[in-house]
Length: 339
Ligand SMILES: [Zn+2]
Image (cartoon, rainbow, N blue to C red):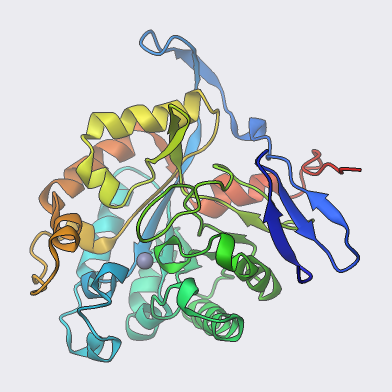
């Protein structure tokens, strides 16, 4: 096994196999420091509830750039499409403003190049800018060098345009998993401090079902992976971190799942959505297969009102402020050695 690669054991521990055959296992990070004041007991759930701050995120890409449309829309044709991202992002900024919520915008380099003022509006409103790669190519379709160039180029432009350091990265379609876990190495080497690119579920397009469900350090330093949120039911990880699932499952079900993560797991949830999901009037793509059409267009008209409820029902903040900075400098023991 090459230096710097990983193996994964059945006890949910990550091990780095170093050049000198040293094994450094990861133990799950204890999130007790993000638990906040106790505010009561939920009679339905029967255990003490804690009010936990969650991380809100937006993946800034337009309707024609989603991975599920790759077969139908050529990247060379992107510039000929009606781009609706600016008006949708402005509506999201208003929505966040109404609820006094700060969030993280994982933004494509392609977007930053064309809409620099949109990024400046995000920054002015107090939101975090993070990277979603240049043009939404899944990491599974890139080799190490191509991935490295992509994330360096994107980070540089986002920092140029926003005037802020960019520390976070999210892979297109959560495309980091067991097969290409080297991508975390590259992110760390290129100055990123956290990734939110692993979805610990089984899915036809993405997922790494055996990955830890919550924040972990893949290396012996301050780089973190923050997996998108799942709820464990009957021994299975089920998605509750947003996207199409949020439009499919009744709102009460999603709220129950997120409360369970906050109260039973005692962890912050990570939620994500896209600007095109609040845009039921977006141009319809022809020729889609049934599954893709169903997933993409389902309940778009209900999305904004659901988000409205979600923002009111939970406490939210930026990824860096909720998840990253509270962990850095903490001298708790995140690591343990095996003999
Ligand atoms: Zn995306």
